[in-house]
Image: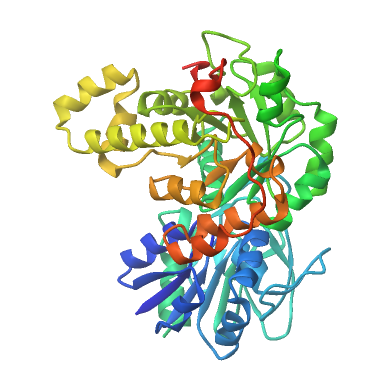
Length: 188
Length: 291
């Protein structure tokens, strides 16, 4: 399976390592020409959503990525990736890809002192470690999106058909189950 | 600081990778930096070039000024404290700064000891000229490393020297046998465990950025190709003719640091770069502060 990893900024190397460990072939997406390569799925990593959103626009990639997701490309967004995919960002007029029917709240747990680790159940997988770094959460999911995990009453993972998002960073832990879920259940 | 908190702090630096951290002195500049694609901003009263010009003792910035910048942007905000000045660091932690830079750009407060960073919950970034310095700072609790460069000069020569030195020392460790590694740990004055990590992984256990003298997209691309995981740009942006354009060009250069054609386009028509001073022309080498 070939997975393209958006490598404009942020923690893309960790996704690459985890997915190659699971047997996928990975490559980095840094420019429009990288989007023409064949892929079975795409990862939008953690980092700063303002930076990635700006680079997607400046490098003329936003519309193409959006179209590929709308056409059904399996896509996994973590943290900033979740914010980029959200249809609306609370308290902000900007929408980046906007392909997923969720409302995201940025820096929802405050500054770095609010970053934390926990262990919570993930639908269909069981308890998994979750690392939240200046993380967002999902304020609300539309009808088409399914909640996959919550943490203290907040939605922190969801799926809508070909799109999977987590507010936390499974790529920063040694637990590969969410990436396996993406490859086996979303990309299949 | 718990082990768990240290991991979270190292992980925040992972999120900054492939990004540009920009020095800003006002909320307006912070907004320009954020809009240009900065992954974080460094809040300080005077940029290094002005600190150098003004002379005298340079201290932590006014917390009120830092708070103004925290309110202006949604990206992480960093601030500098003097080397060894743990009380300044305590103040920065109290205003919930996202990262503290224990920085040689300010006047050192302690000529012998660095801050015991393990006593803090907020993360620290520290400068290093070589592998020994980097690992000593990490053993004191630094969650991110940057080269020391020579701030406020617009001369990239020192950042290059430090990055090359670190990378070559890392490569040397990677080729050593176990008994040689024990001696290397003694020579570098650091824990064996840290030396072993570097030898095994071929990299530092924390993120390593370039800092000091980066003034153009080409400088940023140079540092990335030499192995930096991101760059700090201090005086280079707001001391130049067109800060917005230059900042955005440096951000794109860091993402596509290997695409020479794109770098050529990014380098076009940026207006005047900061004037800069050559290393030999300066009286005060800040990179020599606190080793």
